[in-house]
Length: 92
Image (tube, rainbow, N blue to C red; front, side, top):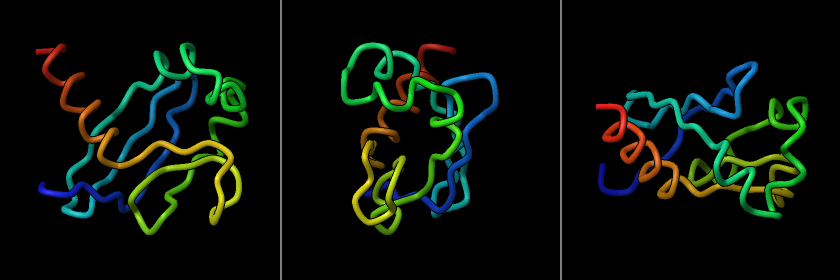
């Protein structure tokens, strides 16, 4: 996929992972525990209830938590795509 874009996102209960459905129909589970623990910007979504409110924002170019137009916390699609590939390679 040249420019990854997100069709849907779902928080996986009991984890800090999301299931991403890309616009081409493929899916990836992306573990976000590391950046959530590491970066202050993700502090608001450390709470499982807050994490569960994830949604697609910016017309599929990101996921976010908070307001759809101006999410409090966001994660860009291209970085999610890269992280999914890294995690897939590490699991192989």
